[in-house]
Length: 161
Image (cartoon, rainbow, N blue to C red; front, side, top):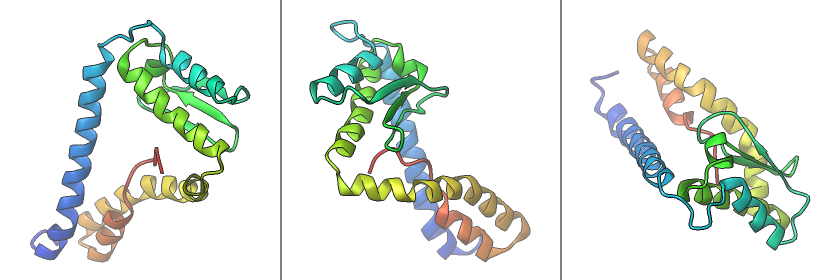
């Protein structure tokens, strides 16, 4: 399998691009988490102000465990922010809170791509957990089709449509 150039032609670019994107996100988060907001407000306050400005007073905002685990749940109309975003008055926290608030605004507007995304999230989350193990098992067992299957469906929790 490792000597199969077709395998690497399809798998390597995806792996490298994913690693690059993840590294850029983390680097920018670290860079801007040290820059405070001019008004000194934390991410949760940014989100609340944006929601209230659009009349979305019923959308709840909660702190949720995990680093960069921020997301909007359209089923419960809840914006969940990691502690680093919820409590921190930084540009990184404000930007992440504003991004996630955008999903609540999309939901309120009935934005079709958000509805479609909400329908596929459970399947994507399951595949993100199972696919890496399929890939590893395929490589260790020399089962090319299993490795291809794992590499085809690996990914992460979608954060935006």
